[in-house]
Image (tube, rainbow, N blue to C red):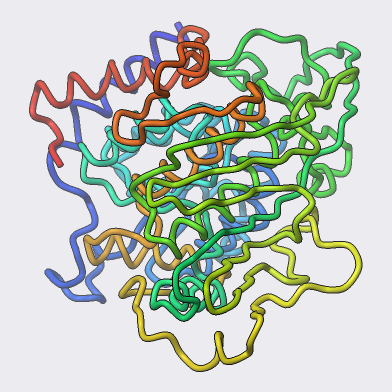
Length: 477
């Protein structure tokens, strides 16, 4: 009965109230203060990032209102409802709609947009279903678990004409914007090489099977990934101190079943900045060669140390290595520019460089980063990472692309996943970024997607909703 209900909700979302028009009409049509111009946001995923970044971001965003929350862990859901209510000045979390199944959220007529802060393996499917339900999509990075998933979600956003923003908040930091603009305007001359420093992850994790907590719908949580016994280190903390549990780094981040480790976790940030500075937002590398050490002996099996070489179609090389400082260095004919978060942390578990503190923006010659850039990378930049979410709301109201649209998000994530495949195979690979396939390498091409456990999966969602919506003419780009 539960699965039948889910299918009903999906069908209703695809064929009912979401017909042809968004519920938010661009401000230029009705005026910025029109009553209908408030964007109602539903938070899907009530863990560490949702609580510390995304919900606070939308609570402070002008023109937004958080109206719903969803999580498969009822303890986290209840906590988030109370947190939202407090932020809105409501007396009780009961005023905030709560659901454990995201279909109950995307089927609501009073929800205009969703914020997806779930584990990585759920990103693409929820984004696809939400887009075809007529919702605009804000989504945490990385954009997808696989490159095939990423293509499907990007296509779904394009077909439905929804506004999309990836949580690559570094694009909303003024010094990252300056660094990319300085590179674009040629202050370094021709770029000879790029250095990207990212951390690795530790091994460990308990392999002892545990009973599934009553508060967690564990089968649904596993989603399209294979069946696996429950242990707390595979999912997230169930500490009795709920606030402490939510703020701790979850174990799923270190399990390849649900992601690729730091190469996508932090790589999605830094490779996105590299793409932005170089104008590579709609392409990808041509050659990939990498090596990495993957943890064994415990539950956590993502990579630790690694070293990756990416060569882009114009011949520029980028080295992505855990031994570089955490940041991006552009090396050109006239010197270098380095950009990072310095000592800043967005969340308590963010890695910072050991030893001498990094400068957030540095250069071989101070003149290379002096003054303001002449190049404008994006017309509606927000220059504070705490207001990255404002760009999403403003983009919906303007009916214009965000600072990190879906195709851009897919391409930066693809570069990370290509790096992961390079680490796995340990040989030089050639990538056709237009066809999104490796050249003459069946083994590598087999790693572009994963088998999806029924009834879940991004491919199933797209084939069910995308084809039907296009055929029936319900939603068109």
